[in-house]
Length: 295
Image 1 (cartoon, rainbow, N blue to C red):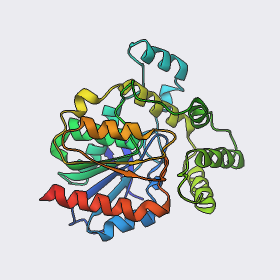
Image 2: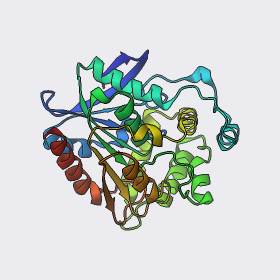
Image 3: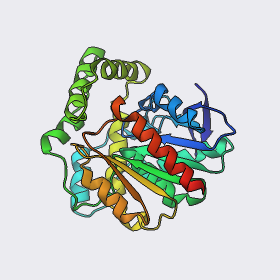
Image 4: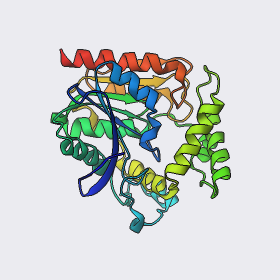
C-alpha cells in the first residue's frame, strides 16, 4: 500500500474508486488500523460514486509510531481529567486531525466528505471544526462529544476493553475475540469467522498495543468538545447503535443535539461495531447525506 509524508509523519493509506469522484475519507478508531474499514465496505462506497480513502492513524498500523513517548500512565491521566487538570499526552486529537488533512493535501484533495467511527468519529469532528474548508460533510459513527455528564458504559465493559493485550498471537486473538463478543450488536448474529479473521490480520499486519494506549490518552486529554462542536457548519450525520454497550446511544444523541442541524440515525440492534447486516443501511445513509451536502 502507498504512503505519504504529511504533518511531519509517514501515513500509510489506501484508496478505492475513481480519483475524479468526490473524496470520502474514512477515519478509524482507537488502536484500529485502516483495515477496520474492510475492503468490501469500501468498495460499496466506491460503487456509490466516491473516491474512498482509508489510512492508518499515527501510532497504528504502518504509519509513524511514537515509540520514544513510552507507555503512558492511564490512571494518572484519568485522575487529572477528573480533577479538571491538564492531561499529559504525547499528541492530541488535533494532531491526529491535522494528520488526516495533511494526507488530503498530499493527495491534492482540497475537500472531502469526512467519516469516522468511535474515536475516529471524534477525530472527524475535530476536522470539521478545526479544518472546515476541507470538509464537505461530516458523518460521526458510534461516537460522542466528551460531555462528562453523559452515562458511561458498565465498569466491566470498560475494564475488558482497556485490559492490556497479552503477548503471543493466539492469546491476543482470543483476548480480542472476547472484546468483540462483549461489544457486539445484540440484534445480529455474532460473526465468528469474520471477527477471528480480522483480528488475526490485524495482529499480523501490526501488533502495537502501546500505540493504542497513547491514542487513548489523547482521547482523554481532548475533553469536552461541545463548545467546538457547536461551531460546526458542515452538514452532519450522526449514526449510532441503539444497543451500543461501550459508547452509549446517549453519546450519539448528544452529538446530534450539539452540532447545528445534525441529523441522527439510530440503528436498532447495533452495538459498538458494524455487523454486515447494517452495512447497506450505513452505506446508503452516508451516500444520501453526501448527496444532500452537495446540493
